[in-house]
Amino acid sequence: MKLSIRVASVVAAVVALAAPARAQQRSVIFSIYGGGADHLADLQKNPSVWFMPGYDLGASVGLQLNEHWAVHTDFTFTRNPTQGSTSFAGANVNRFFYGAHVEGRYPLSIGIAPFVFGGVGAVSVDQMGVDQFKPFTRPALMYGGGLFYGIPRSRIEMFGELKGLTYRWNTAGYHRTMFDVTYSVGASYRLPVSF
Image 1 (cartoon, rainbow, N blue to C red):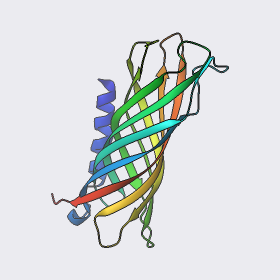
Image 2: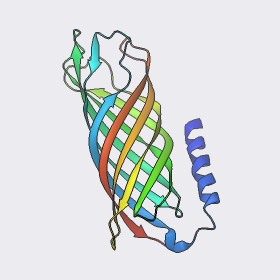
Image 3: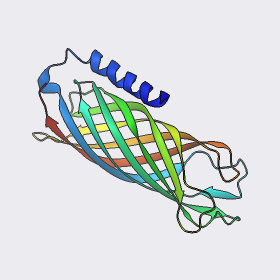
């Protein structure tokens, strides 16, 4: 409950700050992306099992409020194989992140726009094959940045981004703050709106 109140407060603050924006700058943004997924922390410092690099797929729907600010919903799926000497090893682990974030961008005259973002949500974790732990869901932070390139005379943008996910893994005998990372490329379509 507290998490949803915080998300709503952040979204309301961004909308209030962007209220003077011109209507023609506003647009609904549909994005898809995919790439690699990895981890900056294993389940133990000297692990008997560890995560290998995997892949990610995702989609986002957002609202560009003005030239610099947008709010987005976000869904990201990752899959990573495991290796090691325990029965936990040798299976794929899936993660499903869903949440919302605020994005700030700085358009440059050469057609590119660096951007950063941060938000909150939840991550659900499940193991494929013989389960060594019960599926679980935890609150998560999301943060990152990247670069947009707008295709001239179109509503399509290409982008590359680096995203971090932080959450607590406290099941199957492990107690660890996880730092997952995805690196993706994707495309966005902008549909202008007026309100």
